[in-house]
Amino acid sequence: MNIPIYPGSSSFIPGATPFGFYDYDYQFQIDADKVTTFVARRLGYPIMEVELQDLNFYAAFEEAVTTYGNELYAYQVRDNMLSLEGAPTSSNLNNALITPNMGAIVRLSQQYASEAGAGGNVTYYSGALALTPGVQEYDLGTWAISQSISGGIEIKSVFYQNLPAVSQMYAPFGGFAGLGGVPAAGLYGGMYGGGYGGGYLMMPVAYDAAVVQGIELSNTIRLSAYTFNIVNNKIKVFPIPSDSDVRDGFLFFEYIKVQERLTNGLITPGGITNPSNAPYGNPVYTQINSVGRQWIYEYCLALCKEMLGYVRGKYSTVPIPDQNMTLNQSDLLTAATAEKTALIERLRLYFDETSKKSLLERRSQESDFRKQEINNVPMVIYIG
Image (tube, rainbow, N blue to C red):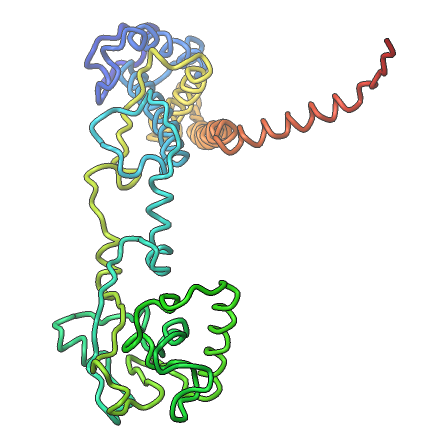
C-alpha cells in the first residue's frame, strides 16, 4: 500500500483539523501552512523525507494552541478561584479582568462566627429542660429524642446562674445586714423589688459598682455556687435543685443541631463551584501575542517529532540495495519527550512569575530598592 507523504507544500482548508476549534480563525488559517513548512524543514525536509501528511501537521498545530490555552486558563483558575466561586457560569472569562473580592473569604469565615455565636450559617435554637427537685443529672440526648431531633445536639450556652448582683441592690428587704439572717443585700430583688436597681435613689456610679462587687463577693463566699458540668450529653447542675430553687421548673439553654452544621455547609449557588466549571474556553488564536505563538510553534514541532518517531518505529530498519538503513525512532521520541516537558515547565514558570503574588512581591522589592538608592543621594543643605 503506497500512502503519500508530505510533498513539500500544503493548503489549509476548514475541516482539516480533528476538532475544528480554530479552523475559521483567519490568522490560524494563514499560520497553519507556515507552521507545516517550518516543522517539515526542522525535521530535515527536503534532504530527508518526512513520513507525515499535512493533516498530521494541522492536528499537531491545533493541539499546541489548545495546550497553550489549557495551561493559561488553568493558571487563571488557580490564581482567582477564591474570587470566582459562586460567580455565574454563563459568561466566558477568557478576556475578563477579575477583581479580587471577599465573598469566599467571608463564606470560609462563617464557621468561626457560628462557633462564637456571632452569626454564621448555623441556627441557634432555644431549649428548656424540666428540672426536678432532688435530681442533679439530666440526659440531653434523651431530651433531643423527645423533641424529634435526629443527629444529636450541641449545647452552646446554659442559662443556669444566680440572680445578678445589680438586681439585689435595692430590694425592699435588702441591706448589707440582710433580713432574718439573709447573708446578702436584697436577695429578693427583681422578683419583689421595684424594678431596676437605681430606681429608688440616684447614687454615684462608683457607689453602685462598689455595692455590686460587695454583693458578688458575698454570694461567692456565703451561698452555693450556681454552675453546671456537661460530659457525654449528661448535664449535672450544682447545687442539687430543691423545691425552693426550682421557681419556673426549667433549665434554659441554647443549642445547635449537629446535622445542620454539616448540611448548611453544602450550598449549591448555581455558579462556579470548582475548576472544572469555570467558564474558560479555547483561546482566540488571533489574540495570542508573538511570545505565545513562538511557544506554540516549538510545541507543535515536538508533537510532530513524536508522531514521526512512532511512524518510523514501525520498522526499525529498511532494506536498501547491499545494506540496511537504520531509522532514528528512538532519537525522535527521546527528543520529543524532553522538549515537551521543558516547554510545559517553561510556560508554567512564566505564568508563575506573572501571578498576583509574584507581581506584588516584585513591586515591594522594587520599592525597597528605590528607597535604598534615594538614601545614597547626598542631602544638600541650602542656606538662602
